[in-house]
Length: 536
View 1 (cartoon, rainbow, N blue to C red):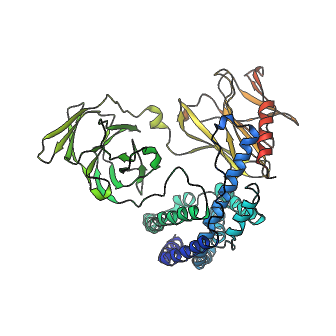
View 2 (view 1 turned 135 degrees about the horizontal axis):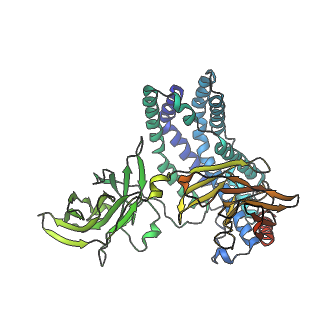
View 3 (view 1 turned 180 degrees about the vertical axis):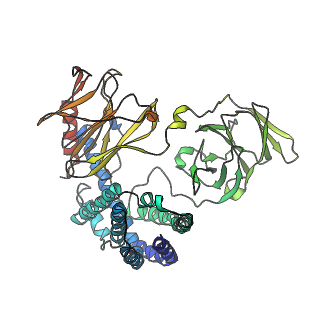
C-alpha cells in the first residue's frame, strides 16, 4: 500500500509534463493526417430490425473496426505520457517484487496487476495515420496488419482484466485503521489524476473531428462551473453546475441548461449519482411549470427551474411538515438569470404535496400542487443489491473467460447478461416465443477469431433441466440455483458452445419433455451474421 501511494503521488507530480507531451502528440497527428477518415460511411437509416443477418454482421464489423481505430488514436496520443510514467511503474514493480505473501491468491493477483501496469506504459510506437489510411483505402472493410495486432493486444489486456481478482478485495481482511487511512490518501491522489480526464476528453474529441470521424449525437462537453451546493431533507447533498451532464440532444431546442448531481452517503468516498429527473434542466422560460418528480430506492426527488424573482421554496408534506430551502441562483453568464430548486425527502415517511415559491420579500410568487407520488422502497429494492451479482463463470471453447451476472430486476425478474470482456462480442436477446412457462433464453455470440455461443436464461417450473442438440449429440446445460433474495422464478441455466445448437429440449421432474424448440433458423442467422462480420 505504501508502494501504491508513492506510485500515485509520483504520477500525479508528473501530470503537467505528461499533458504537455500528449498535446504535442495530438498536434502532430492533426498536422499529418487531417481529414484522413472524412469519407467514413454513416450508419444506415433503416431500422436495425429490418436489416438482414448478414447486413447486421457487416454493421458490427464496421463498428468494431471503427472502435479499434478510435482506440489506436487514443493510444497514439497517450503513448508519450505513458513513456514518462514508465520509470514510476518500474520502481513500483521492483518494490512490490520483494514482498512475500502467506496468501498465494494475493501474490498471483499482484503479479498480474504489476504486469498489466508495465505493459500499459510500454506500448510500442503506433503509426495511426498510416493505419487510418490503410483502412480508408480498403473501403472501410479491413484493418491493416498493425491495427489488427494492436486490437488483439488490447483485447488480451481486457480479457486479463476481466479475469483478474480484485487485489483490494483480497487485502481487505488484513487492513487496519492505519491501512485504511493510507488507502484514502492514495484514492485522493488518484482522484486528482482523474480530474484531468475531462481535458483529455476535449483533446480527443477535437482530434476526432480533425481526422474525420463523423460527428456523434452529442456535442463536445462544455466545462462546467459549480454554481451552488446544498443539503436535502433526506440528508443527501446536491450540487448545481452550469452546462450539461448528458447529451445536449435530449434537451431539444433548449439552449440554456443546468445540471444537478446528488451525493448519497453509502460508503467512503460518497457515491455520486449524476442525473435524476429531467437532467440537464432547461432554463428557458416554459409555457407551463411542471416540477420533476423522481423516485429511487425510497428517496423522492423534486427539482425544477424557477424564475429569477424566486429566492426560496417551501415544500409542504402530507404529514403537515414544511421544508424551506434557498434557490441556487444562475447568473446570466451561465444561462440565467434564473434559479434551480432541488430537494429530496424520505418517501417512506411522507410525500410532497405542494411547492410554494417565495420572492425576496418572502411573498408567495407561485403555488404548485404536486401530483400524488408515493415513493416507498420496495421489498426487491431493500433486498436486491444495486451492484452486479455474478452468477456463473467459465471459459469459451477457445479459452476466453466469461461471466453471467444479474443487473437489478425487470418485471420482477433479475436481468441477466453474459460478458466475455473481449471484442468482438455481439449480444442477441433471442427470447423463445413460447408460453410464459417456457425457457426464455438469451444469446451472446462471438465470431472469428473467437467463435462461441453462450445460451442462458431462467428456467421456470415445471422445467427441471435443459438439453441442447449439437453435432456431437444431446448436451445437458448447466443448472445454477439462485439465492432467494434475487426473486428469480427458477435457476439459471446456461450452455457454452462453439456454434449455436439446433434444438433445445426442456425436461420436467420425471424426465418427460415439457417442450422442444427448433433453433435451426436462429443458427442460420448466426452463421450469416458471422459471414458478414468476417473481413473480405
